[in-house]
Amino acid sequence: MMPMVRTLFLIILVPTLFVGCSKTEPAGPKDSPTKATAAPGPAAKSKSDASAAAVVPFLEDALAAVTSGKSPARRDTRPYGCSVKYADRGAGTAVAAKLGEPAPDFELQDLDGKPVKLSSLRGQTIVLEWYNPQCPFVEYAYNEGPLRELAKQHGGHDQGGVVWLNINSSAPGKQGAGVELNRKFASQYKIAHPILLDESGDVGRAYGAKTTPHMYIIDASGTLVYRGGLDNAPFGKVES
Image (cartoon, rainbow, N blue to C red; front, side, top):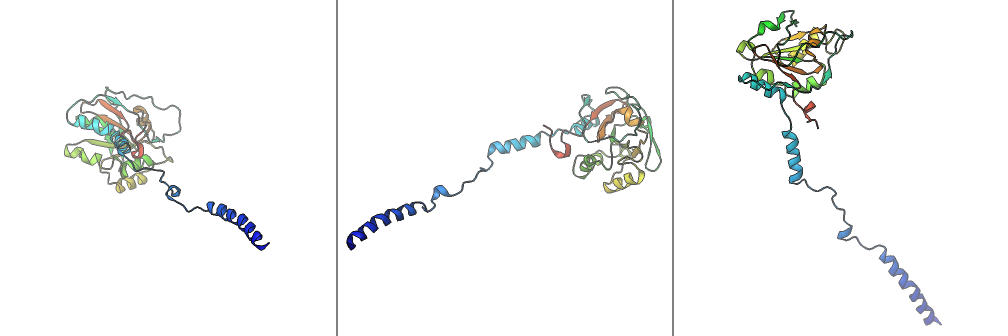
């Protein structure tokens, strides 16, 4: 009987061991993880290059044309940034500034109380920059964006260059208002050109200034030839 029992035992045990081994098959090449992301190819690179090339320096292009004696196409591009912090009062002054027409005259005081009258600057190229020292868009533009060196590159009017005027239309008590706050910003970013205060908002409304920054170019004849944004890339990112 013993040989028969041994035989039956082996018949039952061997298949069981075989089945168990089949469940713990060692991992082979097909079980190793695969990378989900392929290395960027030419297509990915060209897309990135296209995005970088899509930045259009609207203001700089128009300014270059005016200062070189050419008459740029009158442009009205879309500005971006913080809304101008006007005083809370009615509709205010109607927009008077129109492209291709004489820029509305105004007189505002700088941070030292010195009056600056637009018409007294006739014969020179003038840039009006609506700005707010606490606006993130303005801070970016001066810190690493297009306004970091642009005014300096075109020289001051005392050097025969462009007259660059910053205008702050923030009302008292609003973001960016106050002489000391503006002086601190001018010192931090080494702004040598005048910063004019328009606390009533009348000049800003007359020019239709909506954001900070909002840029304007007036040519030597006193004609408004550009109005709009710095470029098409808020915070350096091209708009789709």
